[in-house]
Image (cartoon, rainbow, N blue to C red; front, side, top):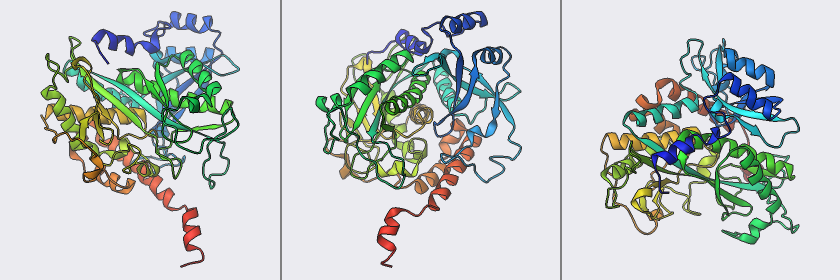
Length: 470
């Protein structure tokens, strides 16, 4: 991960290498005509990282880009994962005024796998006054990146996404099953880094790489993870916003490709009871205006800023867990097994720690945040990590001593449930200036509404053990 400012600038423009970045209207029309684009999906990521938006005929899309006339209800950023809304009318008013949806043309790409020639573009939201919708997750990340820019710094990230391939599951009351591979057999045991296990899904993986390439995603390595039917893909390091965009789209493409092969793909944090959970590890570093990695001194040793960054992660990540562990299911993953963290200890090349420092030269010194689940909104999980590290550097927070050996012998510092996590989040004062009161209030209201809905469900465990016994 030897990083320079030029490399980051190139990575930031990766979504624009096909002539989309800073387009004029004439260039946009030429781009769409050259590819015979008939429809455009205008994508708006919601608070849970779920893709919302509109599908527009190509001529309509060109018009709304030109006159900024594409609108959607502001409640798009208040939808729960179950499709409901918070009951608090101060959060989700009945009037539900529109916001203007502004396509970010640097994300314009041909969408693979459609019968009709289609493009997609990720969009931002603003009010009629031109002010950004501050609670929109993409804008939250943009504000954090801007705070780095004010200091002449550029954060660099590389997400690693784990996911499961499963047999189709039409009945949510039934547990998920591993799908049969090309041998006709389903995995039943752990196959970490198993090449033969990966080859069971060779046709799917080849199509996944093809779709990702056509969509402009920069995939690095693919491995078979420890779970049965569990894979992991790494994205190349680069600009934080571009990597969040790519993580969002990668999850969608994986699900689409899996369905084309008659199976499902899931990014649930803990989809199977006796299998490891799925994470979204985030490698992160920071470069200065000269392209130097500020986490290392000229002799290659750790810089004070690097330690302060880790100090910020240690101090604040346990207080803001809902931003990287947003669902009830997220906390089922955080158990002392399968390299899933329970605290924010840090150590050199230590996968039991929540914060792992890979062995590296000074130019690619970085920290890997292993706390986020694969189910997390990539914009908010990346923003939360960068925010905590920035606060640590600004306030010169010192980390605890790094550890060797198992971090599982150390006390648990992460919350055990979403209830506890939301309570900590609501009372974490240092983050309010960075995230904004409106975002925090809206996010908590959404998560509380989801918890209320979850509490209404009677589980199979309750029927099994209570129905005829108590």
